[in-house]
Amino acid sequence: MSDEHARITPSELLAGRQLLTRAFLEDLGPFPGLDLTEAALGDTAFDGTIVARQDGVVCGLAIAAAAFEMRGVGEIAQGVEDGFVVSAGTKLLRVRGRAADIFAAERTALNVLQRLSGTATLTRTFVDAIEGSKAVIVDTRKTTPGMRALQRWAVRCGGGSNHRFGLFDEAMLKDNHIAAAGDIATAVAAIRAHAGDGTRIHVEADTLEQVEAATDAGADVVLLDNMAPDDLRAAVALVAGRAVTEASGGITLDTVAAIAATGVDRISIGALTHSAPAFDASLDAGRSQP
Image (cartoon, rainbow, N blue to C red; front, side):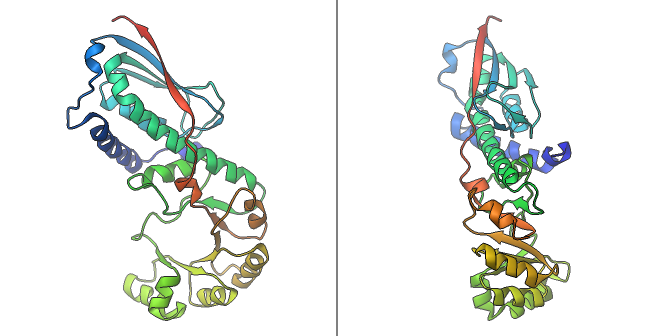
C-alpha cells in the first residue's frame, strides 16, 4: 500500500476535528468544558504514550493527535504513520504536558483511534484473503453517522478502496427503486435525463436476467446481490467487461476468496465499517513534576 493511499485528506482532517468538537461536548460539557477530576491534578505534568495492545493496522493517529492539540497538550509526537502494520507493544503516539489536559483528551482520542484502527485491521484481513485475484475490497454507506469520511479513510489505510460517498455523488438503483420506476431500463433512463450522461449509475441485480437488463440499459456498475459463486461467474461472463461487476451481500472471511475467484471487479463489505472490532490500545502515562 502506498503512503498516498493511507494519507488523510484535508477534508477528512476537517471532518475529524468537527467530530472531536462534538465528542468533547459530550465528555466535558459546554465549552470550555469541565473535568471534575482536574482539581486533584493541579499543574502536575505527565509524559504519556499510546501503545498498541495487539497486532494490526493503525489508523487515526492524525485525529488522536488533533484531540490532544485541541485540549492544549504542548508536545505531541507520532511513533508510526497511519496505515502502518504494527505489533503489540508498538508505541503509537507520545504526549507531554499538563496531566489535566492529557486526561481530558485521552478517552476521545482513544475512541477514534480504536474504531478506525479496527476498521483498517479488518479491511487488511479481507484484502490479504483475496491476494492474487483482480478483485478490490470496497466499503459501503453502512457507516457510523458523522464518521463516514474517517471510516472511509480507515478502509484505505487497510488497503481497500471506497464506494460512493453518499446519495449525491453516484446513483444506485436498488430493488425498491426499480419497483417504483417500473423496470431497470426506465429507472436508468430517468436518472440519465435528470442528472446527465456523466452520472455514474449502479444497478442492483438479484438474477442473471436483471444483470442482462442492467448492462443493456447502460449501468456503469452492476451490483451482484447475494449471488452464489456459480451465478457470479455467469454474471461476469454476461457483462463481458461492459460494466464494473461488484459482489455484495453477506460476504465473510470464509467466503471472500471463493467470491474473488469468480472474476468480479469489486467486493463490497458493510462489516468493514459497521462491525469491525475495536483495536486494543491504551495510554500509559508516567509522572514527572513541572
